[in-house]
Image: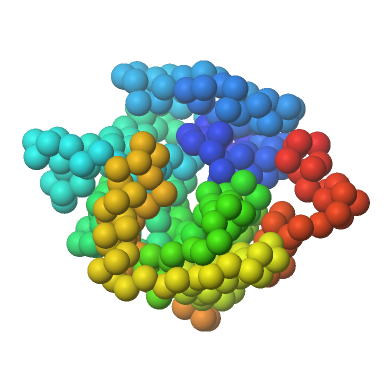
Length: 325
């Protein structure tokens, strides 16, 4: 059966906005629930997209939203969780927020699909996710992924991207923002390895998988064409933005202490759990290719479009993109 009506959980987020736009281009009807409908204003303008105000973690909401859909896509994820009391922590020792959104929500999505007869399910995991991984983030992601792939009565496909970049991302843009104000940048875990993948490529891979029967029961690693250390990525951002900054690579001990200090902020840029995640290389390997014949776009070909200090004429396409026009 061709998929024509899709529920996208997390559709108002960074990856979600690109995926919903990709699906809408294929004339697929898309429903996007969001706790704050105003966050999804760019999507409301798309003719085949409906944005609903809803809390998908509330009892009965998932089942109601999934009813009548051909497929469900779960993109919901977080980078930080409260530590929580011992009795709140999951069986693989992860915080209550990770437990709620990375483990319990995927299980609830599977249950909702079964209850209303939705067979097709796409799920966003993370590269490096494993039950015995050093970080709570990666452990909780792994348990959620396992729960989804174990649903062999459904047609499930999972995706494990490395760091995802693109306009409005929270990774490359974070370093660009810091370099705007700081004369020196201290880089925690400078040797941490990533293989960044363009958000448009992630969206195309997921959209291509929807009607692809060969993808059922599989998990796809998604990476770009090149591996970088974190220090190399920071140096790249400074070069593209033409900002000469002193870059200070920190030792493992200093990286851990910096993460611990940053945890005190209301919205931390880094936590000790992020530090532990970066001990696992987020790479697919040099010979890795995207599924379905897609060709990964290089960081160097995309990032200058939205970071380089251009004149008004050169920036006009960027302004149009940000206005979603």
